[in-house]
Length: 442
Image (cartoon, rainbow, N blue to C red; front, side):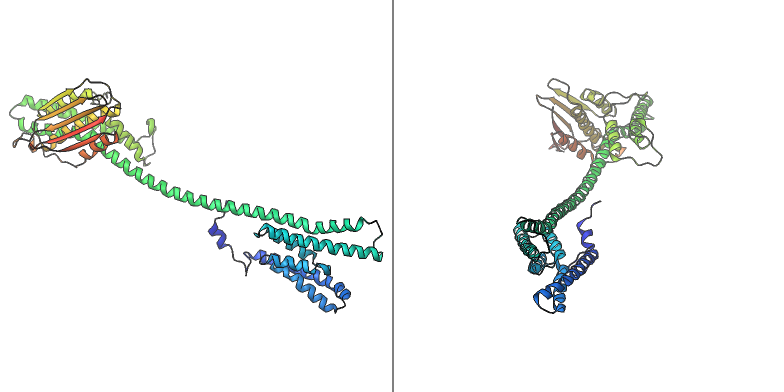
């Protein structure tokens, strides 16, 4: 698990310039060890220099204590170590100072210059001490090569390992910081993506609700409107023409069964999953599943008396659709131009629904008015127009009082525009109403 920048910032609770208490304790321990080392080494330095021993010890303690500042001023620590190298003290100060310097964010040229100074200082001091030891006879004379060899080896042994280790730790630290920053940026991007996904999900839910409403309207509105018209006509002729009343009652029953069957297909999704798999009682159903079922039910054709479902609605069924309106008392004139041909299923279904909804609106708002339905098969498109004349003042179906939600024209426009077509509707100069649509053939 990665730690974000805010969490790391909250964890920076160390004193002064330390980010953590454990870092302060470590530096304090190292400074104490360095002070003890330099204080002990200050005794022979004071004797060689001819100064009081106490002064040499104090000098060594103060010089070694500068290691406490290694994180704040690494350059100063290295310079102090170089300065006291002639006194032959501060090995721990040199090693830790070089490591801290190499691991810091300072420019490489500064690190190289200070490391070179420390190497040269250690080399010179080691060379002089080895030469003195050979002169005093404390070390057996092994040849002229011994002093340079021991000097180079000792100086490299003191400076090279901490320098290389510091460079490695610094590079690794920068890499980890880069990875943390990348993780923080990725986390922010994921949060942004999650917010956008939530927005897209909300938009999709709204779109699915609109789709469900449109499909339910297409499935039910036309049949129920015809049922209401036939019921009103049945009421008007029940006593005068019993035979016609029986016919109208049969039509109402057929349309009611058709509407119930299609509603049952859509609402059945609320009780069963995809492919008929059962759902637990009370389980939620996604809007997409309900919308898909609504679209599937809306794509069905007319259901016969036995409940058998045919193919999806197509333009070849316009005669049957117009026949249902004619049976309800509407005078409908159908004219077809051009040679009929097969279109994509969504094109035929949309054209069929436009005519269906336009006829439904005539039943609602201009019952008894003569209606003209025109269908034109063109080279690259199909055009349809449904226009009704003004409604007569007195009509046997005028008492039906069909309600209107005002969503039929909106749904037709959405369907046509969704296929790249053009939809226009509005009143005519003669007092009627016209619905026109042009849909690309492919």
